[in-house]
Image 1 (tube, each protein chain N blue to C red):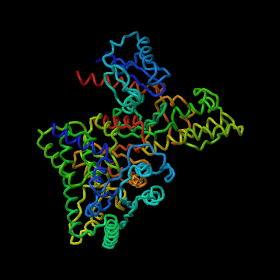
Image 2: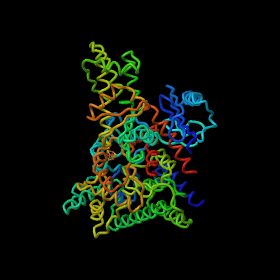
Image 3: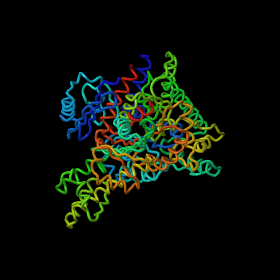
Image 4: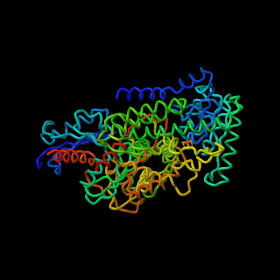
Length: 263
Length: 376
Ligand code: SF4
């Protein structure tokens, strides 16, 4: 068991993440391709991870698929919901985390963890893009910026232009009208982040927030959102550098545990 | 097993095309009355010789109903109204509309204005349903409903005929309870969707025919060899849990419906109508006895206590709340009932649903995760 290789494949709505785990603990390689389900992203992520590790797919004892496109990923030995995988992955990244917020490309999930990363309760956001990665992408496009610029712009803001609409389409119009009024771009970005934070915090409060709180998923890389959410919740949020890979990591751990059960 | 499959498939066909049942009744010269949920005294329709025809909305897109209802009205009423506006309910001699939630209160006026040709019978009952005065109020209102039904059917209904209809409906309820237990004991033979359809078919068929079918089905199920407990046992709650997609996801996730507290299902069959000298008193009293539905005035939230009891009795692993989108009564119940389940240590998943939902991927993730969580 110590040396067996398991692969976790997180086929998201906008990105594909692949992670190879050795012995259920050590990350042998990982890859992240910004193309999600229904694209070449999953295959490319898998190939890249294998290449980095110098391994072949046959070397994997099992492959576990998770994420929005998990059912369509060919040849998976197991398919597991992204909620269970994020719980396992977040626990592996931060063994103390009791509440996990995962904001991905098109949804947000709040998880409450028990011992050993066991999922005790969870909530998902409504069926719309508000407060998710997609929301930030739409806003970045209106501002003619890349979504990766938003965190830095937030840090440079002197004030904040509040965005009150939670609906993506209405918020887009609101941002456009603020632009027309000559609002400062950085202040606007801060307002956009606050709007995501308010929405996320409401989801978390419905679940019940217990510290320590960790964040996973692509949006966790945006320090502006993390800061806004910390302020909204009144508690620090821990973000691992591998936060975006938490789902794939959890999937690889799941496969490893399954092998353990079989042996 | 083949017999079971055959009967389930017949009941499926009834739900797949309720209009065929209505047409068949009309062709035989029987009048039909549309019955909106909840707790309408259907027995009176039956006693008047007419077919009570359930109106629980349908999975369809709506466009015309938007003239009368805002977008934030539940899909049950949007789609029921849409069917009326599109003429899909032509042939009904009337519809019965209970006045038990804000959106239902507007249904009658909307229908009168938009559909016009099919008269509306308002069904009011006392909020204080457990008091003597409440019962008397409801009795008086039900008598008034009976008067309207007599006008429409052209037939004077005797108390004896009402008592017969009450007995026939109680038999149907008993048959439904027996079927529910048999289905839970044989998950290999009855899928969650088949369970639901077998129950739902009663809203479109003649109740006596439905009882006969259910009895035969239950007998066939009971003659099957005992099946070992398999999969997860779930108790469902909510207004409607009849979505083929949602129930399919539940089945894929290895879940059996062990019992339910769903208005469309056990909301109909859990409580019998008491037999009373004046049978209309019994119909009014049934409302005072019923529990477990968000449209019933329930200040102590008996619904939560009943749900905990049901879940424990069914040996359930968890509760699935199919939350009707834009339904105020359900949303109001959610927090106190959730707390009661939490206190009892019963895991709960709420999945929002409306009959216009096209994509179930988020529900799939949530239900799969719930099943994984329950399996530990
Ligand atoms: S109780 Fe809820 S689902 Fe039923 S008619 Fe009223 S709002 Fe609609």
